[in-house]
Each structure stands twice: as structure tokens, then as C-alpha cells.
Image (cartoon, rainbow, N blue to C red; front, side):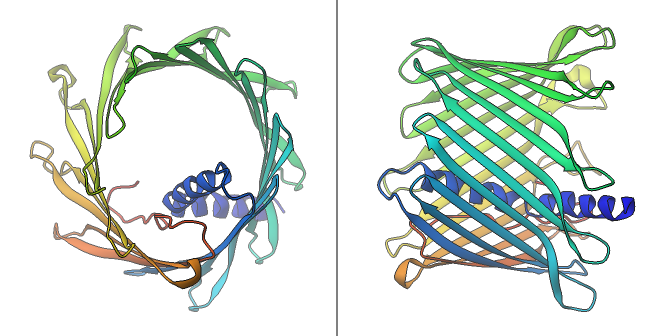
Length: 388
């Protein structure tokens, strides 16, 4: 029984790694639909077919989303192709969100994997309650439970979040993560405090610190992220510095990210994210450009949407060289009749010869969609290639 549980948990974790990009983009589309006030009842279904190069086994995904009044239900079913060339159930996700009253929303998400005999079994449950209070305060409690060796649910993490409007220009978010302790209860293990300060109509400064408990039970700052966001409605720039304690215990900058987004008169959107970090071989030399991600999104007059994303990185074998394109994803969404959309995403990655080769082609069909959504298909893993 213990082996079955561990096997299912491994399936669960692997599946989420494989489908990380797809789930993230899908959640963005869900959030946009759920928060819209123009359409109280919404529903759609979608299927995604994956094709992979080499010996990697593809997956296919079926999704459904229904919203009626204050209740939203989302289901996702992932099947993986086995060595015999047939698809078998691999992972199922069921998520239900209910608006209890004007100030309270509850969400429960259940994930089901498969044991070594192919039997469906629960691998994780996440429950969330979000409550709004007068003055803009929002409190969120999120609990995650996993089954033990006897398949009985055990609480493995709880997050308590409190968002407060300190002043008209300052918002503060405090989060505490609790984990099981040796005495059977819960104890705080991680704390974060984030402040966003609006310094002008177009500028926001942010500061987020993460603290961990040391061996003496005292809180020690483990990381600080701080920076500035400037947004004029068409152009957005975000500069962020990451500081961590060194061997002397003092905080120093170990990473810096500069993100820029712009939109022209034709509606074309461009985004660039540059990441600077210290060279492990010579950290005293300061930060150097390690990665650049460029994304271009276009929408034609006929409704076709295309997204071209390129990731440039250094060559691990020749780190002194400049950046090179290591991965590219081209996503095209075409509208159909009766609100349907058809999407194709092609992912290319560097092969052993240093050339961009196709590693996957995913096709997705969505029916009765309230709006055209650009969803990134499941992420692919290739030896030697980047993992995003």
C-alpha cells in the first residue's frame, strides 16, 4: 500500500511539471472569466492533443469549465500514452469555487493520480477561504492535505494571508506558512511581508522579505525582493533586485531582473525580461546578463492571434560566450464558428548539434468560449535544454 501511494504521488508531481505552463495560462483565462461582470453564466470545454519528438510519451487533456451564478466548477483530465501506444488515465483535477455570501468565497481542489494497478486514488486536496472586510482588508486561509500510507488525509501545509490597506498609498500583505510539527500540531516555518507603495500616478515601489526559522527558533531574513514598477497604460517597466545573506550574514544583491512591456497603435504587444546574476566562477565580478526572454503577441484583423516567445541563454559549455536562442515557442489561435477556437503550439529547443529542433506540437480545441484565450500548451522537458 505504501508503494502505491508513493507511486501515485510521483505521478501527481510529474504531471504538474509536464503541464505547468498549460495550467498557468489556463488559470489566467479562468480568472479573467470568473471576475467578469458582464456574463453571469459561462461554460466551455477544451481538448489538447500533444505530439512529442523522440521517445517521450505524449499526453492528451480534456477540460471543462462551468459557471452558474456564484458556483464555478472546473475539471481537467490528463491521459498519458503508454509503451503499447494506448492512452491511459494519468491525472484528474476537480476544482469548485462557491461564493458563500457577498464577502466570502470558498474553493476546494482535489487531484487524483493512479497507483501501480491503474486505480484512481486521491493524491492531494487544497481548500481555500477568502473573506473581505470593510476598509479593504482581505484574509485568505489555504490548507493542503496529502494522504498518508493508509490513504488517510493529513494536513501538510497551511497558509494564512492578510492583506491590509495601511494608507491610501500603501498596501501590506503578510503571509505565514505553517507545517506539521513533531508534537502533531502546526508550527510556523516561513513568513513573508510585502509592501507596495504608490509614489505617483504611474509608479509603485515594492519590498518583500522572506524569513525562516533558525535552529534557535528565531526568525532570520532569508531573501529580500525590492524594486519599482512604472506603468503609463501602454508601457510598463519593472526592475527587481534579489538580495540574500552571504557568508558574513549581510544581505547583498545576487540577482536583478528588468522587465519591459509595450503596445503599439496596431495592438502589437512586446515584452522583454532580462535576468542578471553573478558568475559562479567569479562572483566578485558583479552581475552579468544570463537570460533574455522576448515575447511578441499579435492579433490580425481576422481574429487570428499569434504569440512568439524566444528564450536566450548562455551556452553551459562556453559560458563566456554571449546569449543564444535556446528555446522558442510559437502559439497560434484561430477563431472558428459558434465561439470555438483552434490553437497550435510548436516548441523548439536546442539539440545536440546546437540547432533548434521541434520537440513538440500541441493542438487544442475549445468550444463555447466566452472569449479567445491564448493558452500555453504543456511544458516539455528535454535533456540539456532549458526548463520553464
